[in-house]
Image: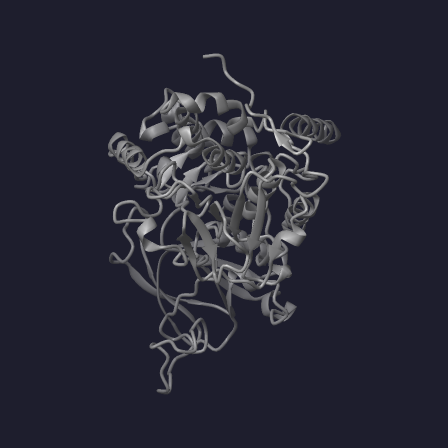
Length: 514
C-alpha cells in the first residue's frame, strides 16, 4: 500500500510540473522587460527570482548571510526539523519534486538549492550583502549605494523568522540571551542562578550540545508553539529521560492529514463560517484530542490563529512521555524553573500555584524575531497601512512596485509556501508590463479598508488572520476590480501565456473572451 501511495504521489507531482513549470531560459535574457531586486535568498526569494527569470525579467538577489545561508530559516534550523504540513501544501515553486510527504531540513534545502541553480540564480545572487537602503530616484529603485544599477521593482522576501528570540528570566546567567550592549546586563553578583545548560530550540544541533546534555536527563521546554512541540519530539528521540513543557497558552493541534488540512483551509473566508465550519472543533475534540482533552484551548477558537500540525505530540502527552504544564515561568532557580501553574481556561499571569519544576537542562522554544524592513522608506507604510494591513496583504499601499511576499504574514490556516508565491510575483510582473492594470494608492487603501470593514467581527483579526481559501478569493477578485486585468488571468493564476520567441515577447498572454 505504501508503494501505491508513493507512485501516486510521484505521478501527481509529475503532472503538476508538466502543467505549471515554466522552463528556465537557456541564455541570458536578450531584451529583459525589466530589472527586479529581490531582498532575501530564502525559500520565497529563490522562488520569486526563478519566476521572474522564467518570464524574461532580470533579477539580482541580495542576501546578508554567506552562501551557507541560502534557504533562509531552513539553513538555520535543526537537522531534525521537518515540514509539519504535507509537502503537497509546500510547493514553493512548480518545479519542486518531493521524495517524502513530510521532508526534513536536508531535502528542503536540497530543493531550494536545485531551483536556485536550475534557474541560473548563482551569478545573480550577492551573498554577504545586507540591504541597508532601498530608495526611489527618478522613477527607479536603488539598493544600497546603487552599484547594481536601477531596478523597476523590489520584492522583499525576508520572511517572518530572523534571529533566535531569547527571553531573559531572573535567575538566568547574564551572558545567556543578552546582547553585549544590553542595558539589563549587570556586574552585580547573581544569586540562586541556574548554571546547567540553557539552549534555544535552534541550537539542538550545536556542537556544544553533547549527548550527555540530553540523554537520560530531565529537560524543561519553555514554549508551546510549533517549535516547542518539535523540540519535545527531538529530545525524546535523543534519549531524554523526562520532558516537561511549560505552556503559557494552549495551541490548537490538528492532524497531519492532507485532505483534512486542505478542507480546513477553505473555511471561514472573510471571517464568516462556511456550512460545515462548526464541525471542525467538535471533530478534533472527540477524535484527535481523545484522551488529552485538557490540552484543548478553552477560549481561543480554531479560526483565530495558526494551528500546530502534528500527529505525535498528543500521544506523547497521553503516554506520559511528556508532561504538559500550563503556566507562567517566573524565574529560574539553581534547581529549575519557578512556575505559576494555572488551570485550563485561565489567562496568562492570572493567579495560580507556584511550584519549582526541577531541570537538568532548559530549552527555550521562544521562536524567532521578526526581521525588520526598515531599509525601506517609512513613507511606504503610513499609519494604518503597515504590516499586515497591506494591499492584497503583500503590496505597499503607496507604491505597487514594492512587494513583500510572506514578509507580512501573521497567522493563517493554509500553506506556508505554495503557488501564491508565483501568483503574487506574476501580479507584479503584470503591473510592470501593463500600466492599465496598475492600482493607485487610493485604490489600494480602499481595498485594505474594505477588507477591514467586511472582517471587522473576525476573531483572528481582519488581515492578521486569514485562510488559504480567503486568499484565493482575493486573488480572483483582483482581476475584476479592473477589467483590463482579465486578459492576464491565466498568466497570473497559472503562469500560462508569457513565453519568449527570438528575444521578443508575445504582445498578449492567453486571453479570456470578454
